[in-house]
Image (cartoon, rainbow, N blue to C red):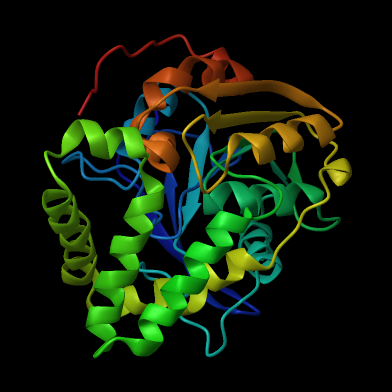
Amino acid sequence: MVLPVGRSFYTNTRFGRVKGFRYAADNGRADAPVIVIQGGISATGQLWRLDGSGWWQSLYNVFAPAEDVQVISFDYLGGVGGSDTPTQPLTVTEHTQAYTDALTQLGVESVEAWVGGSFGGVLGLHAAAQQHGPVIRRLAVIGAAHKPSIQSALLRSFQQLLLQHAESPQQGVILARALAMLTYRSADEFEQRFANSDDALQYVLAQGERLLRRHGNQANTLFTHLTPALNDYQVDPKRISCPVQVIGFASDSIAPTALVAELEALLPHCHSYLSIETPYGHDGFIKNVADYQQPLRHFIPPLKTSRLELTENPL
């Protein structure tokens, strides 16, 4: 059983020191199959925690039953975790090189599966398409596509303008995060959840304040070092030779259905494509794990053969 406590480690890459976490059974083999899990730009490698506050806690049920795997996740360079913040922002390609270099330094020659949500899915596409680093045997792309949508690029451009014109960096972070919340969730959710626009405005501003409160000045680098990279990337899906599972969300405006369907059509070996109806928009990749946990588990061989099935959160 994969434990919800990760052992932290550091590796030095050409782009800076990267902090990572390894989740495995206490008696797990050091050479057990590796599954890499990467989340969105505000993610850390602390996927799961005993108190239930992990970044992608809802995904734990998918991996906990595995008896002989190790899960590895990295804090992003320039993110809110323990990895370095480079002087200059990295491109998506450079981010991918950093984390695949870190895997190589750990002695990982092949990755049984790369599971990526949002930014992590973009990195997974890059890692599977590149010609160096550990071999990616399977790739699960959740809420991501092979290129940015025009709307998401506009969002990030407006975030940069808010940072430039805000009265303080702190105000810039609050406003940039509040704007992001408008596109992370769907119009239907806002209609169902709030009685009026004033309540909705207070909610999105509170999310910006929460980000600033939790991460302080480090929150600023999400918008100076990570989000701009997502405006200028493109992956050729035809270069990806491994089986790919594509999971999208019908109300997602960051990775809209048209782009996700285009990715599915261009992949040489798309194992399966699942489109999920949800009011949560882009955040469906976190909120709707229950809707895709069984397809994901059956896509990854070491999880499919696990004998223990969890039906409730074991934490």
